[in-house]
Image (cartoon, rainbow, N blue to C red; front, side, top):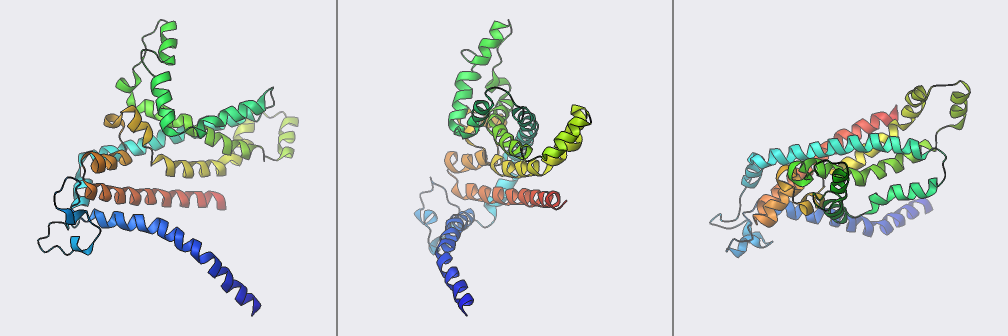
Amino acid sequence: MATQQTRTLGKLAVSPSVFVLLMWMAVPLAMTIYFSFLRYNLLDPNPICSLLTPGALLDAENRCLAGFTNYSYFLTDPAFFKAMGNSLKLVGWVLAISVVGGTLLALLLDQAFYGRGFVRIMMIAPFLVMPTVSALVWQNMLMDPVSGFFAFISKSLGLQPIDWFTHHPFAAVVIMVAWQWVPFATLILLTSLQSLDEEQKEAAEMDGTPPLSYFWYIVLPHLIRPMTVVVLIETIFLLNVFAEIYVTGTAGPAGNLPFLVYQYGLIANDIGGASAGGIVAVILANIVAFFLMRMIGKNLDA
């Protein structure tokens, strides 16, 4: 009886937090779904369509209820396919750079050398920089074709500076985002390397195992699981990249789904279309997360 009472009291104690968490997630999603079925435009003089009231759905003249028109318009917009392609390409390139670069840096930082602690701290620092600040630093201090650091290096070597945001805008965004996420992968993989069995290391060293064979047969199998975790976490966040594209003005060639939703909502003032785009983006993100979770589950069970 005491155990049952304890369980009941525990559930009652946790229930307010669970309720707040559900409301925190459910209310914005429900409002987005609601507005996605309305002709809700910020420039529309009809005020009833901009109110969260049943009147918008019960409008006798059908001035507000759009049905699936917003979804149809968003999914058939040529910009949607370009934005989705850019989103997937951005995720793919940054993941490849993060996993490869993070593995190499983790192997380097796992070695003993003078000042290793300081180097490890500085290596993690880019991950703590806000995306907006990162974009401004890369745009004005590093990639500027006139006064940027890369332009200075090119001129010193007698080469023509590259105007990244004019000729290679997508590559510029990939570099900026990867610069922030490589430290995250490095941190996870370095932590995993430090848990590698010392007896395996000593046995490989005593047997005179070549470095490539040591990495391929001992280190890499040990890193597969943390690599899958890095892929899952980074994919979820990389699908939401926005600040780098907005700040650098590379929306044309490098615009992704979040930026397309922004264009619908705050440039075209079409809140209904932006809400439909947001729901489409949520569905696509959940599909990607579902397959990634299945992949990670298989790796963790192996």
